[in-house]
Image (cartoon, rainbow, N blue to C red; front, side, top):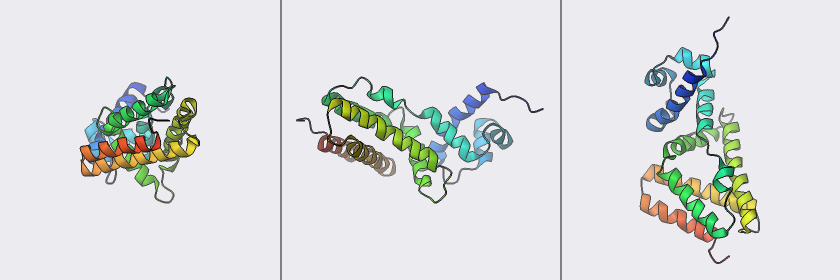
Length: 188
């Protein structure tokens, strides 16, 4: 009989995966060095998660923000603009930066045909677009909330990716604010 999963240990492993990938990258991810860094064996990682792709997807799922909560109290267009700027800053340089760095790598990998990350990427993008569209609708900030939400989500993600690659905080910070101002002008 197989021994039951140790859920505490499983949670500890998931917590370490995102930080490991943020510093080592996804491209050359191998279970042995990852397991060693996490203080376990590759055999145990397979036992808990099945595949390295499933391990990564489950680790990212623990990092996904509650987007409904992020925008829940937003009722005015100015609040939405401020929340988006704050969300950009948090994800570009703040507490969520490691998770976003890994997410960007997974989204890139999801572009490959038959990628094991396609479902996760689709769900992550749809969740953000949908919740932002709800906030846009609630605040009356857009004629076509899904299109505007897609523009903001994709544009801000691209700007964060630019910052990750180039390290240029000033230019990308100005670009994020310019995008938000262009899409959600304060005079609406």
